[in-house]
Length: 359
Ligand code: IPM
Ligand code: MN
Image (cartoon, rainbow, N blue to C red):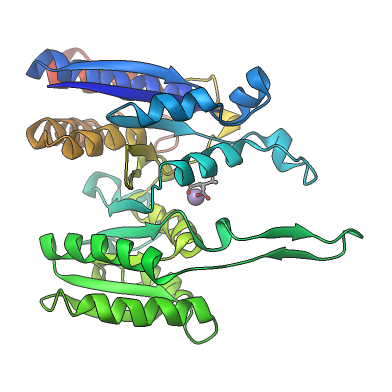
């Protein structure tokens, strides 16, 4: 198979983790006879530094003409600490999501027995945890009107959803539930928000097309608690943009590290694959970031290409590193391996050249 892949390294640890993911994709290409053409593009703080624009037109162009996009991370503290900054790195990612209409963000939450000890939860709560968050990604409060009054004493962030936006992600989430345990939980705040009440009524309608799926409803405050108390109860969580952002970071603690969680964003054109973690600037350039979220995002890309065996090999390689305690500093601050070493070990596993005794 031949594919064109746009690579957006982004900011902070983004370049280090995406480099490991492309290394792993190279190893897969060698082993299974595929050909990837990678094209690097700019987005985020690095793009602002080089062009003044967090998302240059050329990046959109390359992404639209690619079969998939691999993205690292975005953000730089120099903008976080300056609330009046007009141009911000995150605008690049938000604009790209909108430009490609990447409305469905899929964030699987898996736990690894080898890492159970790292989770703040008890071992028995972590058993059978395997759910996926379907986060709406191109609407809601993220994209509503934003305003700061001229005297700077009042600000507005408008939250808007229309039925079409809710329907399309609801169908995607129900289809996923059909392939899984056939349970879907809509997370909202329908006791307070009008948009949430619209979500409920649209989801109730869409549910009639998927009568095998058991649907339940949770208010977001309760959902946040349930994810910690009894995460194994979930199969597919469907939710709006901001609730999905918050709950997916919360859910990542179940697996032991935010650095482990991958994601895929689907829309009407090119799909994008990225770890859910941020740019982690304190770790940038130190070769200590966890590359597994990025590598597992590459595995999601392989699944998207229909290369399920190849994706399974990458996931097996990741499992192998974790069970053999080849882990980065976020997982073991004393006996840790470097980002690039983990990437190499995974490539060796894939090529079948691993000489485990020597490590
Ligand atoms: C994420 C990130 C982004 C978001 C930021 C960087 C804009 O936190 O992908 O979860 O809030 O969507
Ligand atoms: Mn986030």
